[in-house]
Amino acid sequence: MECAIEGNLKICNCSYEPCSRKGKCCECLQYHWGMKELPACLFPDTIERTYNRSLRKFIEIYKDKV
Image 1 (cartoon, rainbow, N blue to C red):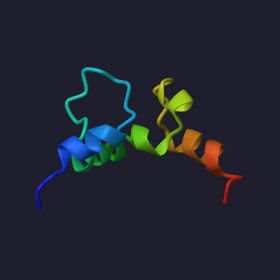
Image 2: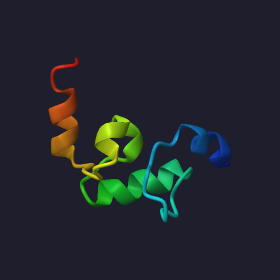
Image 3: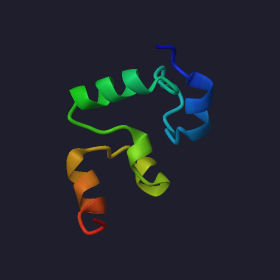
Image 4: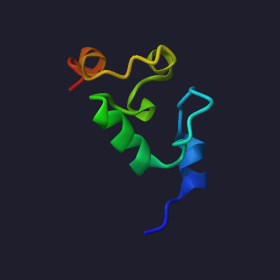
C-alpha cells in the first residue's frame, strides 16, 4: 500500500514544524501511541497547539460529546 502523503498533509493539523512524520499517518500513530499519546489530528486546533496529546486530555475533551 502506498502512503498518500500529499493528501494527508492537506488535513494534518500538526503544528510541530520539525516533525518528520507529517503526512505519514501510520508512522505518526505508532510514534504517539508508543508514548501513550494520540496524534494531533484527533484534537481540536486550540488543544493541539498546547502539545498535550495525552489520553487523559482526549478523554477530557470528548467525554461528554458521545
